[in-house]
Length: 102
Image (tube, rainbow, N blue to C red; front, side, top):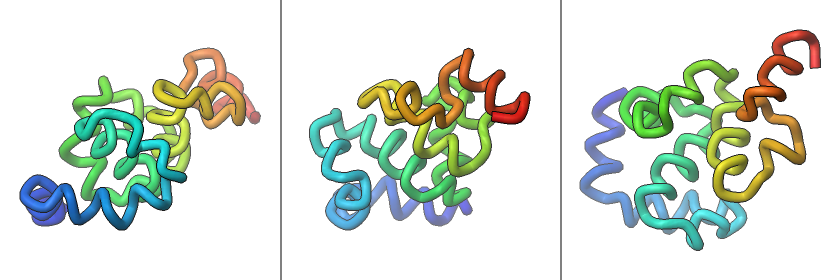
């Protein structure tokens, strides 16, 4: 898992090139760090590599949400507001809702 992180650290650009697209290019707009935190973590569906290292940067919020939610809700919510719209659970209010049964 951490090995992946090393790759990410050294070659973030690689990841940005490929996975940013998955993010709809939204991460491109965000700062590089956010991309990594939000874009990768988010899009990778929580590909645990990302979750391990950079979740911390996200304030551990992703940890609380499901892997998918983490990715989609966490960064999108903060950067794009997706979490709020789609209810991916990054919002505190949404979290409760999702946990309570959606």
